[in-house]
Length: 176
Image (cartoon, rainbow, N blue to C red; front, side, top):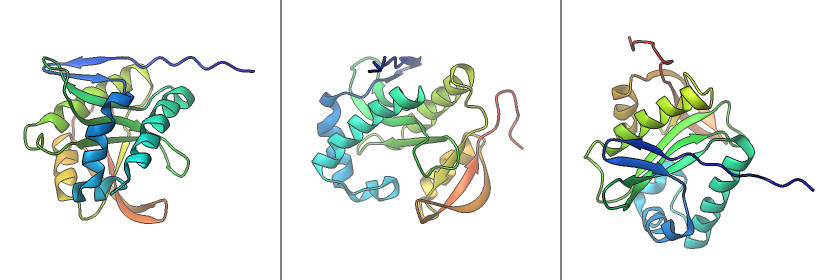
């Protein structure tokens, strides 16, 4: 029998910490996925499905060695959203994804978290020049991807659903 060892690094960036997701995050995760804003990231979902997301996230770290972190306020520890890398079955390549939960949008949190995750991923996981799958109707994520220096690469599909593929610059590249 193989024993899995799980190591999820904590990434500190300014007033934010990217940390391991845990069962204590279920209430905030379920509240986000109960709302319409979750439509761009697979929602709405039931509370039970959100619990499975937490378990799947931890499994992703165990299987791939990278995954999604909870974005937390460094001072209070309050969870604000999720950001990190996804490379599940059906993905073409690793994706940088983000979501900021209700009440925290419009503060630059997703930008700072995605930038920190992308920098850490390139330096420690070999994830450099990753993509982001973005729903064609999600103009806020498109604007964030552009602000991060990503460029629209092509129209695509993810698990049978139309999406846009945005390519992030490699470390040291200057976005055109």
